[in-house]
Image 1 (tube, rainbow, N blue to C red):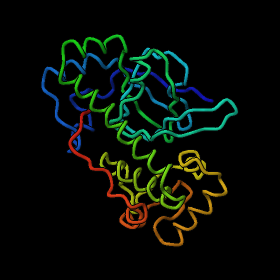
Image 2 (cartoon, one colour):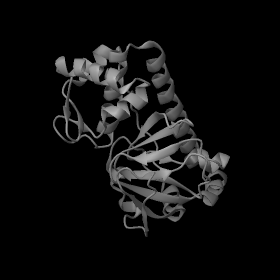
Image 3 (cartoon, rainbow, N blue to C red):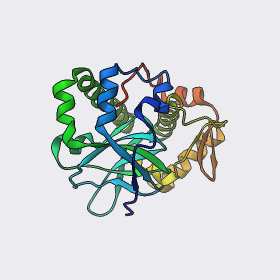
Image 4 (cartoon, rainbow, N blue to C red):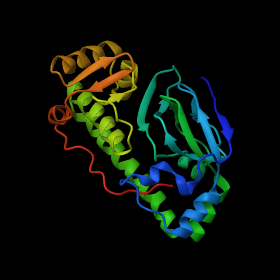
Length: 251
């Protein structure tokens, strides 16, 4: 496990945050933006494959992903891994460790990432003086629970091929809203092992399942990961309508 990262000052001011230009994120009030600018203590550059947060640790910080891909996961004592969800720009990381002291999951970078760093001790000032931002954090936690509910449904009731179609459509749809899928066709930087660890399937079963999606011309597999060729076909196969993305908070 590689814990890597280089702390730096505020290279990108909150007032110039590139994510704020995207329609999916709600605008800040001026006092909220001023507080977030003070709340942010710096930035963390993380290498691909590095661990951002470790299960069981006490984190003094929480983070917002500014760029890049990551994932949250838990490990069993024998080393088996369950991926819980994927991290994309605008996602808040480490809130659980901030409120409950100890992280119950780990976070790893799927690609090089840039994270905004916030001091945990200032979170209580946010709740005390900025109810709008406090509501935003509650909204983000609720949204995470909603995504986990859908993922649980997939694991419990969808077939292996439906699960794989759902997962790829789920990741690709989220990525599109935050500008991660600008390539044509959209690419997701995951391996078959990541998919296996998310779906709870063996690597052999995952490989066979993904080959069926390739044969249906829904996806293709490239050196850098999975390329989506037919998003609607994936949604139809998964019996899923896709993420209902509305304007959402950005902390």
